[in-house]
Length: 77
Image (tube, rainbow, N blue to C red):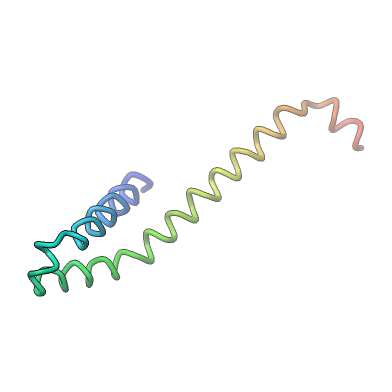
């Protein structure tokens, strides 16, 4: 699932780059097609960014827990 979301994000970024291309801007039909696709993909890309952030925070929390060891937990209790 993460691979599929990464591909969507990559395609989203490519579309974003293409939308700034002067040739694409000159072809309004092509530009509008990119804009529609970009808008459709945006919610998924934003959620994927949030998912990556949450996963990073979970990994960081796990590292902190693992660094402390059981001695620190014994002191708390």
